[in-house]
Length: 99
Image (spheres, rainbow, N blue to C red):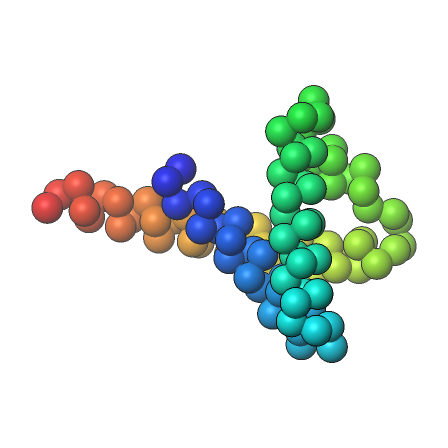
C-alpha cells in the first residue's frame, strides 16, 4: 500500500528510540535499526521462504529474540497495533473517496 513504507520507517524509528532508551548512543541505535530493516527486507525479497518461516529461522528457542517476540506478538502487541493502524488507514481512505 502507499502507506506501507511509513509503517516500516516507524518501526525503524521506534527501534532506534528503544535502543537509545536502553543506553545505546543515538548514532549506533539508528545504524542498528537501519541495518536490521534493510537486512530483513533483503531476506524477504531474495529468499523463497515467507515472513513467518524467516522469523522462526532466526529465533532461537529461549533466547533473546524469543523473549522480545513473546512481548511483540502478545495479545496487545504488534499484530493488534498493525491491524488497528491499517484499519484506520482503510477507514480514512473510504472517507477521502467520498469527498
